[in-house]
Length: 108
Length: 110
Image 1 (tube, chains in turn blue, orange):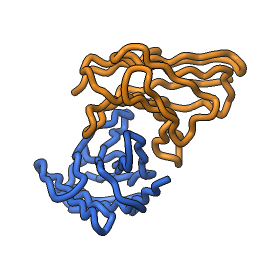
Image 2 (tube, helix red, strand yellow; image 1 turned 180 degrees about the vertical axis):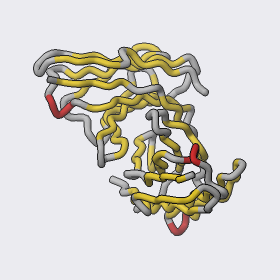
Image 3 (cartoon, helix red, strand yellow; image 1 turned 90 degrees about the vertical axis):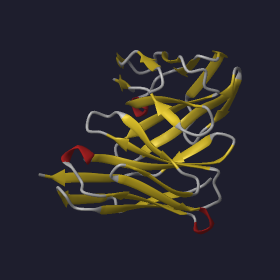
């Protein structure tokens, strides 16, 4: 099946810093999403982005489908950004694969 | 957010007993998913459904079965629970693009 690799596995930032999270996938996909899991375990969809670039406030994402990677940018990080960020892809007919996530810790 | 509920939210059971987890949605989404989340493994797909009575296996389907007799309900059954099935189980739904997650069920198999 399709492989999804996220990097870095862990990231520690000071409040106000910027960061870039990366997701590489091994095959063509027709669906790519970024999720945030907060410290209480809740999973929130950030972006549906199979290709192109989207922005939502301090967060933006870019997927280059032809090169099989996606990037999530977090600017001016806040302590509430802490948690685990997951990339998930769907290659065919609904079968989704998640990466192992990037654990982000933002220190005040 | 999509209306997705999971029941029970917490369960403790003994090895060898059957367990059924329920996912209920109010969004009329076509797709429904069951995942398990374990430390160091992220989320792994157990089974998914692409319509009423239409289901398929995911990455870690052994020991699990599912049923979807109505659009709004997706049941996950552990026929004979084992300690290796201790995990947090998440249900998700979607219309083909974005997945929306339920709050999760913590299952402990003793």
